[in-house]
Amino acid sequence: MRKYTLLALLIIAITSCDKSVKPIKYGEDQCDYCSMSIVQKTHSAQMVTEKGKQHKFDAVECMVNYIKQEPKKFENATLLVANYNQPGEMIPAENSAYLISKSLPSPMGANLTAFATTAEAKEAQKKLDGKVYQWNELMEVINTNSHQSR
Image 1 (cartoon, rainbow, N blue to C red):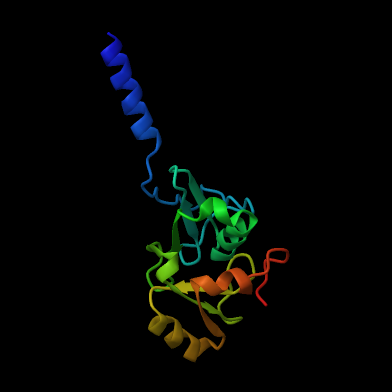
Image 2 (cartoon, rainbow, N blue to C red):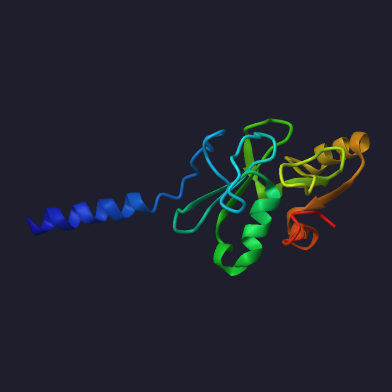
């Protein structure tokens, strides 16, 4: 009997630490940073912590600001952003390129949009102006207090 109890506890422990990414339920899920409904498949973002906790965001700038509150806490998290050119497709945040352009507004006003490649971001930049950034630059570029980019 004791063996079965230990086995049951082990199964519960394994399944409770599920680190797989759960899809965003657009129109239902709320942003963990600003509490707005997540509706745009072109600007959403999400994070799964090392322990498997899901965090969903209506905009990339919300995820950046959420991480800025406690950066060490999220060092090993899986970070994903919506690929603007493939709405609803989530791509690794660290490998993506970002365009900040007033001609392409995002939900929280930072005008921040993610692209799968730097080439795609630069192609959009030719049409829309703005500036292209990499993930590691966003922590400095996105202003926590105003939700606006510099």
